[in-house]
Image 1 (cartoon, one colour):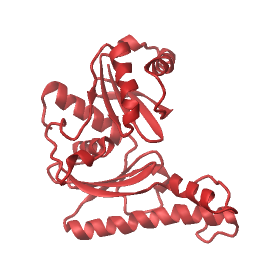
Image 2 (cartoon, rainbow, N blue to C red):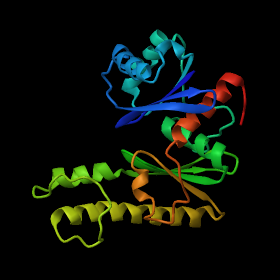
Image 3 (tube, rainbow, N blue to C red):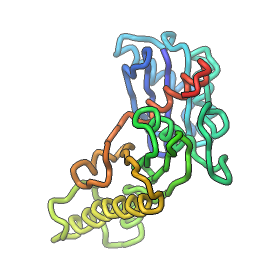
Image 4 (cartoon, rainbow, N blue to C red):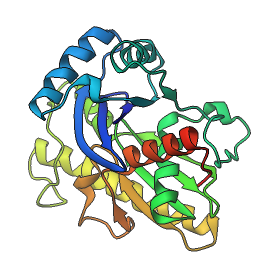
Length: 259
């Protein structure tokens, strides 16, 4: 079995593949100080509950945007899966060109999403990944990564309001019933939620205008489901896009396939 690990700034996802199917997914808050042994204890308990064990895992692929976490996650694979993991980088994904001046600056998560989008939906495409940051990643007709946009995520914006304004409380992010808030909480929720809907719609419109050919838009990420039914700018919502991209990169690297 394959363990695909996506280490994000806020959460990490562990997806267990049997063949080409992700049979289990588990989510854990990201911590740069969590050791390989701590990961193993947590994961072995969850696998036991699912009727499996760590020794069932034969291979591992890792994408991380938190460099401090890589040492411990890599050691998890070496010690407990008995394999050297694939660590996604801009220069080790077969068949994917990175068409920007400094390819090393592209986060592994953005490259994995590009692969997942192209493999599943073809190109050209835009991936809107809503998490700690809101990323807009452009995938070319041939699957190349062609650049994009990075904006602060919804949670960051809500935290900034609370921390910078003495009288504004910390509130949960949710879709408000009305655009015009009649109290402080409603006004904050509306500003962040509908503000982000407008941000997505505005940037997608500008991308489409600049790209000048029809382009699919795929929504993914931890809070992407909040936007379903709220905007027509996103054509497809796919919560499993990243882990599917990890599986495809593993397939290409281990089996020499290009696409």
